[in-house]
Image 1: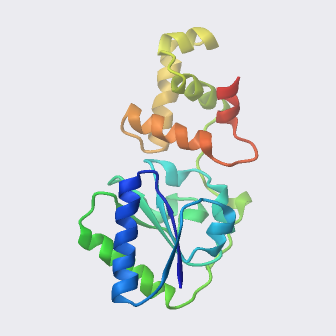
Image 2: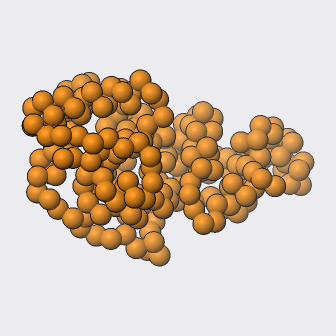
Image 3: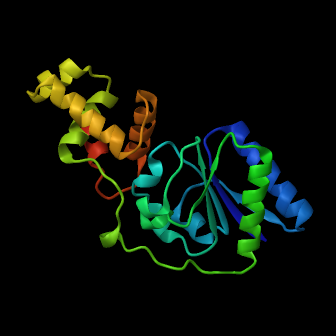
Length: 211
């Protein structure tokens, strides 16, 4: 039995992933599959294989639930971008990335490799230490500005609200885009949504959005 956790919001894409996994693991390798879709610490702890849909820049930020991971393989679905292992937080450094629109042959290769890794029954090599984690964050000023942008305020309105120059707002936005390797306002909005929804004890962005 292989426990597979899929964290994917697009129903049809999730269905296609399940069909692919059943075809490969079930038909070719003769293994029973148990699917889970709730991204909870319990499911993460029990998962042999995790497939996570990630927006651009998301691998750089803290995902506290991954501390519950004890075994298995992580596959990250991205949108064509590339990440270097040394730039990622500890929880993401063992993740294998594949583009959502990659050829089917790439998916078969990645999932076949995952299957062979699972046969070695390895525990995760290193338990992440949060105090030493190099995940990327927003500064307090960036948090306030990003919250205002997320709420739809214009740059002049934000500058007036915070009593700063418009150029300062642009500069902070540029710094955030560079820090998380974002290329468009759409990427920024998607990342801010994920940041807002992160299950952290102290989520400053969420608190700013409530204010």
